[in-house]
Length: 255
Ligand SMILES: [Zn+2]
Image 1 (cartoon, rainbow, N blue to C red):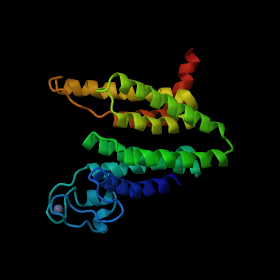
Image 2: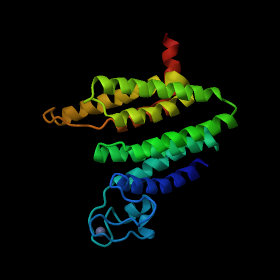
Image 3: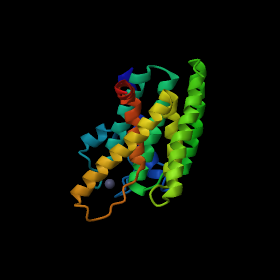
């Protein structure tokens, strides 16, 4: 089942590459075929098999020979791994579907934020609505309605904290990060309440500080780089979801 979920993830990853390319360019994500960005040649079905086509074509367009960005196979691979992890953690359940969908959105937002320094509202708002619908259905099926309260608290903590930061330091944090925090807080709170949310926030800042520190050393701190924070929020959330429980237990055990 985990392997099947992984292959399904590769296919949805292919859709994620198209969505992350087209949404910020305001192109339709439903109609239109994928094209080579260099020669405009329409990508055929055989050339569009996730990851495998890239490896088989050695990362080049079959028509013009120009290099294809490795971001496409990497996006597909990341989605495949995250889908497999979702079904490995939650089993064959609506919860696994909800979190796989959530991870898909995180992949799309990460790619868009890295390229455009942008977290589009027309991705985040529908995701928050769809997320609440899926999680509500899951909570009812599992007969665990208290999880919805945890999700609400999570949304308030994560979103509230970032809104405060954005309000106090407008140049430090964008409103896109605040909206993303609402989505992350919902899915973190649903799994582990306030503890998970705080851990996710902490991990976001930790990964951001580590990567920012490495970047400052590599560039010798000369240039002031503008690193988008969205990818770190996504990374911190994933770390909390998959390794949060043992970390929290160990931490609480030392108190
Ligand atoms: Zn080409």
